[in-house]
Every structure is written in structure tokens, then in C-alpha cells.
Image (cartoon, rainbow, N blue to C red; front, side, top):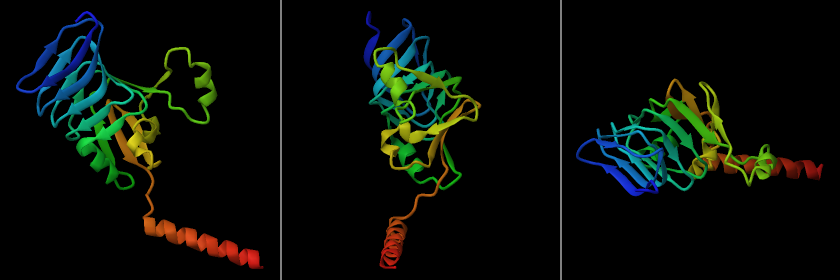
Length: 204
């Protein structure tokens, strides 16, 4: 339509070619198993982006704040540029797989990506600069090969795991587990041991 705004786009029984203006704002974008969507317009999704096993999107894609990203497997191909805003939710098989990663293991979110841009996450280091830009356009950084960022800065339901990092290597965007998560019992025992040690020192 004239506003380039659609409620949703769903590839089910076949492949879809979209001819539109410069961009499309979508509430939902769903691509079923082994289906594809090709678009000359850049797409922005603000509610649900669901990509099943073997799905392909031939377009530039922005996953906007508040969107849930459901992935059916590690074989979704995005032939275009990817922009991730903060405040996303990871869902589907991808969430369970990422939560189950051992140290050194990775899960592929997207392959075929030509360029990855990340919205600047608010941290203590950049809070002042972002506050100064509050009336300006959102600031982004381009993630180059081999550079990593905290996955928790972009997927809010991964916020309890600081060991998960987001990386971009040769067109593949993945999440890697870099630190072991202590078991609750181990954490409790460690805290008790520290408390006992502190009490002994006070008595001396």
C-alpha cells in the first residue's frame, strides 16, 4: 500500500516475490519449511519473525525492538543485510538449543548475511553518548568478521547468561557459549564457604 505497511507476510505453499518501494514495515513475517520470499524492498519486522527449517529470505532484514525471532533450525538462509535492534526475544527450537550449549559450542542463527549491523546497546560505557543522541537517529555499529558482542544485549530472554556471545564470520551469524554456567547447588555452596571464611576472619 502507499504506506508500505503490511500486517504480515506468510510463505506457505510456494515462493513469494515482492515488488515494492524502498522498505516494508511488517508486523509478522513467516516462512515455512523449504519456502522462500524474495523482495527488492528492505523488510522490518516488529512482532514475529518465524523461519522454519530450510527457509530462505532474499532481502535486507531489520529485526525491530519487541520482535520475537522463532527459528526452526540452523539452516535458515538470509541473502541480504541484517540489522538487529535491542529488546528482541529468541524463541522456537533456537532458544532451547542456545540454552543447552556447552562451552565452545555455537548455534547458527543466520547464514548468507552480507552485512550485520547492531543497534548500540546501552551500557555504562556508552550511556552518556546515547543520552546525548536521544533526539537523533538510533546509533548502529557494523559487526565485522571475527568481532563479537554480548547476545544478552540484543535478546532479552538471554540476559541471565553473560557467557553467550553473538558473532559474525563469513556471512554466518551465530551465538557461542564462552563460559560455563555454575549449577545452582555449586553456587550456593560457594556462597556458604565464603560466608564461613568471612565469619572466621571476623572472630580472629
